[in-house]
Image (cartoon, rainbow, N blue to C red; front, side, top):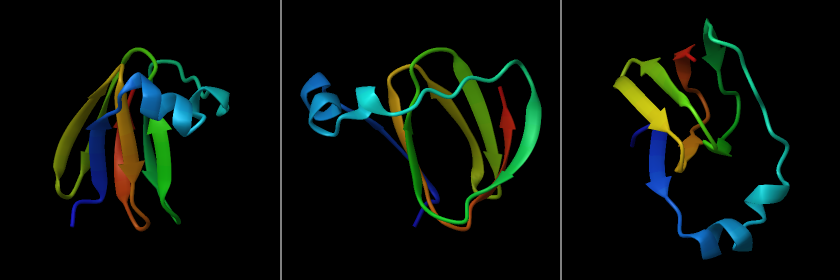
Length: 78
């Protein structure tokens, strides 16, 4: 099973999950290592990021709803 799951959610799903009430994380242009010690979900609001993993690279763009699975080691290219 992939450790990065990307979906497109309908507006109704975004509202149902109350995603718009989640905290907003911002980051300047940078490259950094990251490790997920638990499952984490996010909605990309704007911009683009490339996540490099052992499974391959994932390009995330505005509108992508992403689940990062526990145990994922990756490099973020913001």
